[in-house]
Length: 140
Image (cartoon, rainbow, N blue to C red):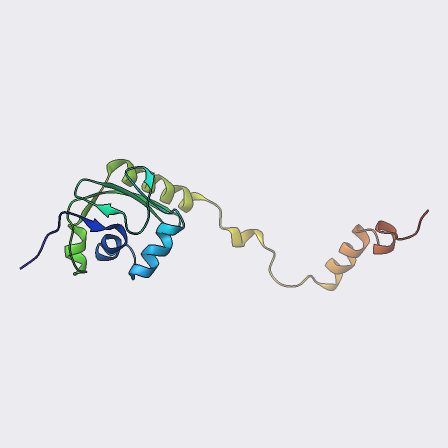
């Protein structure tokens, strides 16, 4: 027998809906202002009800979901998926962000691998002005 609630704490709902592994992590994210309820900043004890709109950030991904159910305890992943519905705007935004990240150049490719060779080191030393000429503690 499943119990349904009229209201539930935000941190407990985020944990039960499996957005975060622990209630402590959910509280931390809420206190860092990464979770909004109905476009207002929220506190962990904020009471949610069915129909509320929750916006949360998980790393680079921002999701907007509508609350469909409140559960007194954490259940399986299939039960958790029935507790909310992601909005269409959120799905489209995340799809566009995922595509942009996929098409972006790999940052590691811009890094030259390894230490410079002896020849490259000499070229670097000749290209830069010596330390004494750039910075002088003398008064002249």
